[in-house]
Amino acid sequence: MDTVLVGGASVLLFAGGVFLLQDRLNKSSLSPTAKRLAHYAMVALILGAAVVAINWHSTMWLATR
Image (cartoon, rainbow, N blue to C red; front, side):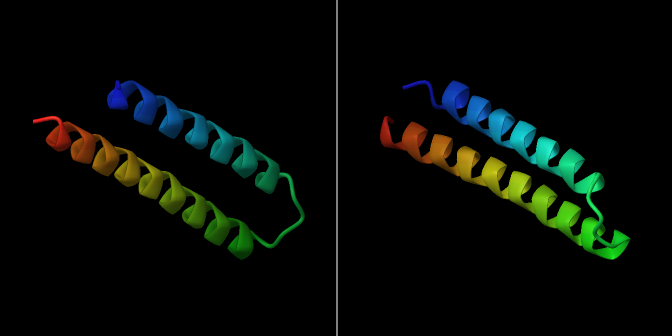
């Protein structure tokens, strides 16, 4: 299985969804502080998804060696 392709595409799709949510959040009537904290949380989710994808790829690669 091509884990780089699947993992990379998954992270990109996830990041695209998060950025759409961030755009919708910017248009909401929440306070600026709540918006900022939500943006930080979403960026942390993107980074977490990237770490999970890299760990999955590493585990699969080591299992085949």
